[in-house]
Length: 331
Image (cartoon, rainbow, N blue to C red; front, side):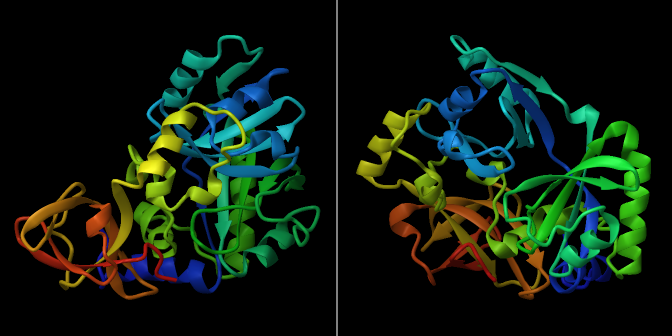
């Protein structure tokens, strides 16, 4: 939990919003290779992997046969017939891939232990990156990947992040971790960009303000119920497509919405706490956190679609903590 008066968390949060900050990245990595890698991943995900050229990446979701989200990932096209899937749940992804790989000439491997990952995030992150790499990132587009050298180590630079700010991810071989981390620390220290040491700052407080949800927030919902209709390509086949089309025609049963908690503290609110409208259950909480930019207790909730009325006041939990339904983006 993060609270309004947590000065350490506030300082790290504000550094990323106003300057820059860095942290060791937290995702797993699965490498998918083989002559059918593109076609296989295009089958697994709702986004068009076939339209993602080498050196680019795509945010997308993976559905079950009922058209409901079981994971959200970044798929990076690293080279011909080679992709990296950035996920929080590599073992689950590998089991799902194994279940559906029949007829595809592919290999899948969890390479998380072989690759270390760092993130440099914030409006001044570009300037920080340019001081430590052998080449500039000035022209690197969002969701693009390039090769570079950092303190003698070969690295991959991916322009992406989970903070809602300009940002970059640095991938290196695990044997180069010590040198790469030291170089990142030196460059960031020189720019007054601190290391983020509080997990909830970069996994929850910063992303939630921008409306970025985790897989656990969206799990079991359709992309349409999460506001991710823009990510769905119905012109191709993918697992869950028919069920998703039917769900779209029937309309959403639920909505992933924002909640602003009106009490001074949200410490009595837990994940899956029941949300009430006029005393009748209408949904449940997915997350609650303090946003140091917006100066509010905020979070996500899953609400029955017809009751997810923006601006409507609801109560949360047995203590009837007051809250207001909002858009899930505060910036």
